Structures are given as C-alpha cells and as structure tokens.
Amino acid sequence: MKVLITCPPMLGQLAEFLPIFEEAGIDVIAPNVIQVLSEEELIDLVPTVDGWIIGDDPATERVFKAGKAGKLKAAVKWGIGVDNVDFKACKALGIPIINTPMMFGAEVATIAVSYVLGLARQTYYIDREVRAGNWVKPAGMSLAGHTVALVGFGDIGKATARFLKAFDMHINVYDPFAKHTEADEKAYQFLNFPEELETADFVVTTCALTPGTKHMINAETIQRMKDGVRIVNVSRGPIIDEAALVAALKSGKVHSAGLDVFEEEPLPIDSELRTFDRCIFGTHNGSNTIQGVRRASHQAIRTMFEFLEIGVTA
Image (cartoon, rainbow, N blue to C red; front, side, top):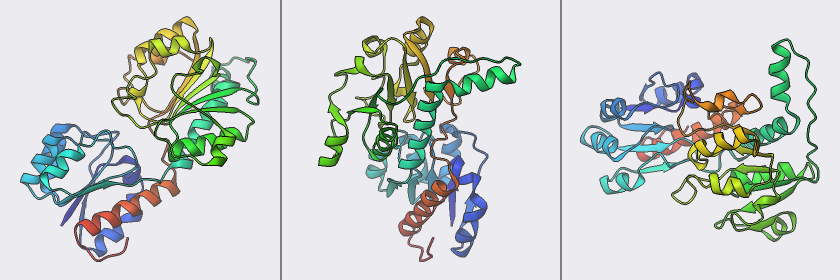
C-alpha cells in the first residue's frame, strides 16, 4: 500500500514518522512541496496511492474523481482548515475523509500575539532598520487598555483572546457561531460584526474561510475602523481583500499589518504588500511547531490507518 503526503510541516519531520509506516508495510510518497501541489500534479499522483494526507493543496472534485478511478481509498486533511477540500465530492464518491481538529489553537494564537506585539512596538521594523545601518527609535504603543476586534472564537480564537487578555487588553469577539461560557462573557464582549469596529486598535482574524467570511475585511469595513488601526490575519488569506488593504496602507488608514496568510501563496514577488516596511509577513506557518506537527501528524496517521483498516498504532 502507498500513502501520499503533501503537507509541508509533516514532510519536514517525516523521518520521525517513517518507521510507523514501515511497520505497517506502507510506502510513503513524499514529493517536494513548498506550499502546495497543482491540481494537475495531484491528478497524476493521487490515483497511484491508497491514502492521501492533504496539506493546503487544491483537493478538488477533479482530483478525487481521478483518485477514485485509481487506487485511492481514503484521505485525511492534515490540520484544521478545510476550505481547500471538496468534502461533498468525497462523500459522493464514497471516499472517507476527515481533518485533524483542535490541534493548533495555542500554536497559531502565539503567532497572532507575536504579530500584535511586533506591530505595537514596531520591533520587526526596527530590526530591519538596524540591519540596514540605521538607528531608529519609533514610539511604540502600550497594549494595556487598548481594544482588539477578534474575528473568530474557535480553538485559535479562544487561545488568542486568553493570551491578549493577559496584557490587559479589551477584547471584542465577533463569531455568531461561537460557543462561550459564562466566564467568557465576563472576560470579553461579544458583538455582531462590524458593530463597534471603530473602537478597535487591532483587528485580529482567526476565523475559518467561508462564503460569509471571504473579504469581510474590505474597503467598506476598513473605512469603519479607527485611523491607524493595525490588522493581523492568521486564518486564511482571502478573509482580507488585499487590494483594499494595500489602498488603506497607502493612505495611512491602516498603520500596518501582520499577515501569516495571503490571497495567493507564496506571496507574489510583485505584490505591493512588499513595499510596506512596517508590516510583518509570514509563510502560512503559524501551526508549525515541532510539538504541534507531531500531534497533528500522529492523529492523521492514526485516522488513515483506521480508514485503511491497518492494525498498527501510530
């Protein structure tokens, strides 16, 4: 049997997991993946394997149909985001599939907090200027008493809220589907987006990408924000209309942004976002800690083995 792995963080620690597959008599197909494989590459590869552990690849109906016509028996979406996977196609084709939820709340939240801190104190900008031979001393912003508009209150959002609350920040939460406790209601203010958005000093997005959240940060909602607002996105790139963000950065409406994700990944070399030196950019790498990858990968392997009816413990 063969299992294809296209998730870069898992591939980065693959040596640790190979003995588990070897014990189960499974060959691992591990292509060189920087971010994702193309749909055409997947259409060639997926039919040749029994199982597929998916990263952020375009796991489309075409790919799954090709897989079903070949050997594919099961798939697991590594991580929590599922917007790139056609689950309906899997169900129609009889291909069992699931993701690995509740794995990276704290990991991604710490990246969100690091961006908030970096934008508030301009530490990344100062670092770049020092490396360039300059000695700048921009005035930073204290976090205590300032307001965060937190969009999304799932596993990541809850951890982000908890961490930022420790800095004595006021947290406005926007998530119509959030489950929250009485303690949450005492600690945070729950609002309907974009209610009171103009009070936020930081807007932090930790929500899933859905038709309802795509481009929810756009020219109109940015205009409602406070002048000099700082925006952080650790969820999915299309949550933000990048053209509107670029315009707002140019005008100064948005002071700066911390983005771990983009509408197109990797970030195109000609993207205007690259011209704003006070911004912080990541590589869609918020979940990638040794411990977090280990947890999610073992869960993905366990689930795959269950789907393939392999009696080896991951």
